[in-house]
Length: 218
Image 1: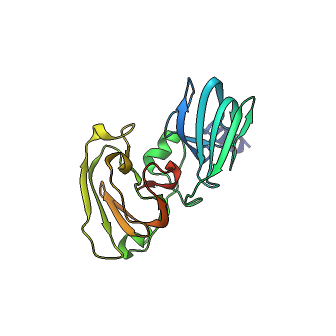
Image 2 (image 1 turned 135 degrees about the vertical axis):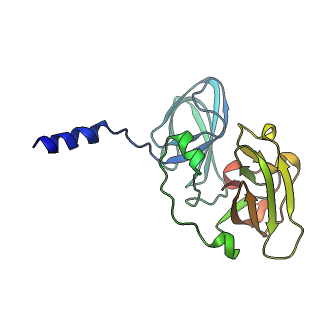
């Protein structure tokens, strides 16, 4: 009996695991407790003042919400907004296939159980699709980046990213440096000793397309 009670108390003492994030903050204006590129989980409540604005993009449903004022309760696929206004639009994204890196999971308080590496990076089969010609790369700390086309011959795009050019020390937006890929192309991204093969949708948009549709995380 004592042993059972001891096990029960030890389980109660364990910290609760945070829920998986369901959305990413694309913009935050005002005194909010979330910031640009933060991941948020279902059930998270964010309070906005009358002049505050929050832009959320949902990873699974691909809803992009522009919310002004009120109290926002994050849901699994869209938010509930009380006392404010919300404008929703569907954006192209690889819903349900996005994965968190170890660093991003740590920022969000999420425990990630990684599956064995996929053969895509070696075989050239794309592991994900992006919907913007200029991806946003998660390459914490910067370094050397190579983006090589694998579905046809071509000169690789290779460049160095200094840490000071990264947003929040992690994210690099190719649109800001006027770099673009070819619509319909399949590419291998290599950075920091990691790589991933991805496809650019044939109807991918140029420039600053919605973040959730062009974010690549190694």
